[in-house]
Image (tube, rainbow, N blue to C red; front, side, top):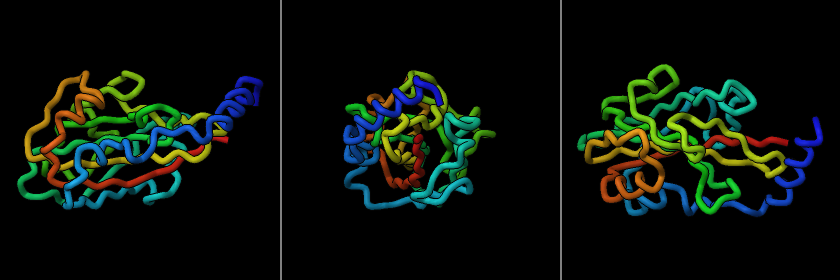
Amino acid sequence: MGIGHETARVVGHAMRSVHAGADKLLARKVSATTAARLTVTSPDFADGAPLPISCTVDGAGTPPALQWAAPPTATQSLVVVCEDPDAPLPEPFVHWIVYGIPPAARTIDASVIARYGQGQNSKLANAFAPPSPPPGHGVHHYHFQVFALDAPFDGEASVGRRTLVNRLKGHVLAWGEIVGTYERP
């Protein structure tokens, strides 16, 4: 490892106590009173377990496959969001926004992403931003959240987290999440 990595590791270690916080996750902002839950799983990782390297910046950087239970019958669309509340930022780092998923869908993976809309991640790209926590910052938790909505959500390519919060408030019928972890030494 070079001096650049060592410098990043020292800075990351010094910032270990700086986090956006799980209380700022999208699910906490838009569905605090929603009792209905969706069971979300992945064939790529178990809830609370490390993400495969292939899903991170140190691998191919592809999003993991996600699966979920049937949403409530009134569901008109689904939205998937991945956030990292451990990022040393004021708000969680948004890794992925996928919207316009039909209510009959029960899975999403890299092969079907082109069928749906993708909003802006925190890097201002309409794509999956693979986990890349600062070296030495500790374990980061990646919350893959699935929201069942009572209204269509087609959005636009530039939809970001702030717009998403406003559009989802009052429309979440059910939600669930699976959390993967990743750490860079």
